[in-house]
Image (cartoon, rainbow, N blue to C red; front, side, top):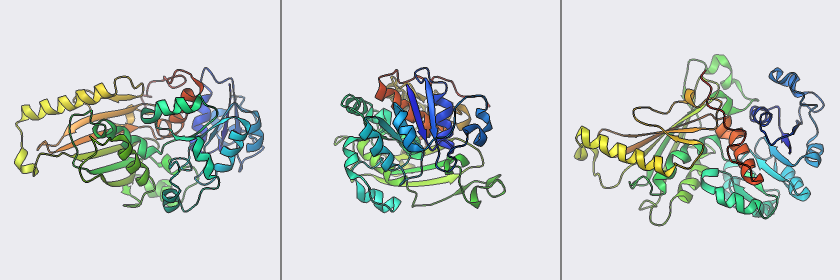
Length: 371
C-alpha cells in the first residue's frame, strides 16, 4: 500500500513518515509540502538521510498516486484535499480540527473562526477516537472511502481518562463538575511557533496558557457527553473546566482529571478509614482495567504506579492511574500519552489500520522508549 503525507515537514507529519516507514503493510511513502516543494525531506529532517523517501511533491500529485492520504496541516487548510481524495476514491485522515466537529459548523466557527468550505463532506467523516468510535469507523470504511477527524492531543488524554467513568463502568457517579489540568511538551505547539516557545522562554518553567479558552475545550466537552448515556450522565449535565499548561520538555502530555463524586456530601463528612479508602480505590481501578481489557493501547497501571510521560515516550500507549483523595469524595485519574504518537501520528495510523482492515496494532507495537 502506498501512503501519502501532506504536510510532511511539520512535527506531526514527520512523525507520520517515521512511523509509516516501519509499517509492514506500507510499501512506499509519498510526502508533500507546500513550503518545501521540490526539496528532499532529509534536507529538512536529516534524521531521514538514506531513507530514500524521495522528493517532496505537490499535494495534488501525491493524492493522484496514493492509496490513502494523511493531512498534517494547520486547521482550516485540509478540506479541499479531503474533497480531492474522496473524489478519487481514497480515504483521508485529517490531523487538524477541520473534521472533529462533525456537522456542528457553529462550534467550529466559534472556536476556529472559519466556516466549512465543503459542509457535505461531513456525511462521509467520522471522529477518529478509536476507543469510542471503532465500530462506526469500520462500518463507514466498508461503505467506501471516508474522512477521519483525528482527535486533538489534549482531548485524547482527557477523554481516555474519563471514558470508564462517563460510561458508568467505574462503578461511581460523578457530580458533573469535571476539572482537567494538562501539561504538554513544546512539540504540541507545532514547528512554526512564536517567541513563547523558544528555549530561553520556556526552559526551566511551566506555565498555563489560553486559560478558560483553549480550542480543545469543546471537543473534550462533546466527548464527555458522547461517552455517557441517559443512565450514566450526571444530574444537571456536565460542567467542564480545562486548563492546559506548557512544560519544559519536548514530547508528552500528562492530564490530571478530577471527578467529584455524588453521595459524599462535603469532603470532611466522608473521611473513610485507610483500609476502606484503599479497598474503594482498588475496586475502581479493577473496574477501569476491566473496561479497557481488550484495548490494545490503553494501560491501567497497578498501584502504586502513577502515570508519567517518560513511560509512554515514542509509543502509542495511553497510561492511566487511578486515585482517590483522602476524603474519598474525589476520583482522580491521571493520563499520560506521547502527544506526537497517540496524540497525533500514532492514532492516525491506528485509524488507517481500522479503515484498511489491518490488525489495529500493525506498525504500532513498539514499546515505549526508555530515554
